[in-house]
Every structure is written in structure tokens, then in C-alpha cells.
Length: 150
Ligand code: HEC
Image (tube, rainbow, N blue to C red):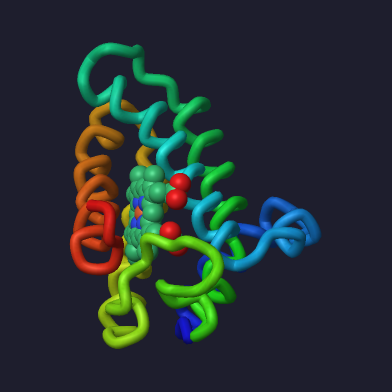
């Protein structure tokens, strides 16, 4: 189980948006965490072209992408039950390490939440470009250990 720390950060993001979790409740936990990850990928599609100089810096678009991701990921703490391990009825790319190394997975989750917040807090283009690598690294380092496909 996630600590109150991680859960609190996600819950705070949801509350501040005034979202209901009804839509998420319709999805099973594996589908829900994959939808969260798809929102992460969509967020990267906004940020990476800015980093590469292929799109103009746009704080509103960045913030919007982060807000959508935080909303899609708000139920995070509830999505890693024992019944969602690989090998069940619903296909998952999560590796067994999520459960055998729960502390490490939680630390990786926390690193990501903080890195995402740092990008959201970046007030201008220079700050965004300084904060972004930490976020990219947080995706990559979690996937290296806890996701099968990477
Ligand atoms: C704390 C760990 C962790 C972090 C941080 C993380 N991911 Fe993931 N990601 C996973 C796991 C585990 C899966 C497999 C989920 C499943 O299939 O049940 C996954 C799956 C995905 C998928 C495939 C989703 C699908 O369609 O099935 C994408 C895309 C993805 N992640 C993108 C990202 C991006 C981009 C970031 C950073 C902005 C990120 N992830 C951060 C653990 C993480």
C-alpha cells in the first residue's frame, strides 16, 4: 500500500480540482492506472516539443497537461492491489517488482509526484527547461524497474 504521503499528494490534487472519482470508479484498477499513464504520455507530447525547440513555450498548455494528468492519476494509491499482479485476466505491463519491492516503487512514485510539481511550479521558460529533465528521469527510472515493456 502507498503511504499517506503519496496518497495525500494525489488526493490534494484531486480535491483542488473538485473532481468526483465516479468516472474512475467505472474502470478496473489496471485500466485506471493505464489511463493515468496515457495522460502522462499526452503530457509529454506537450512538453517534449518545447524542450526540443519545436514548439513555443506555453505555460498554460503545460499546466493544463499536468492538471489533466494529476486528475487521471488521482486514484493511484488504490490501483496496486495483490489481485492486479501480472498473469491475471487483465493484461498488465506492471512487473512483480511493484509488489516485491513496494518501498522502492513508492519512492519512485514520490519522486515522480515531486518532479511533476516542480514542473508545474516553474514560472517561466528557463525554470521549465531546468525542471523538465527531473520529470523525464522519474518516468524512465520507474519504468526501468517496474514496467515490463521498457
Ligand atoms: C512510479 C512508477 C511509474 C512512473 C513514475 C511512471 N510510470 Fe508509466 N508505467 C508504470 C507502470 C507500472 C506501467 C504499467 C501499467 C500497467 O500496464 O498496469 C506504466 C505504463 C506506462 C505506459 C503504457 C500505458 C498503457 O497504455 O498501457 C505509458 C505510455 C507510460 N507508462 C508513460 C509514462 C510517462 C510519460 C511517465 C512520466 C511522466 C510515467 N509513465 C511515469 C510505472 C510508472
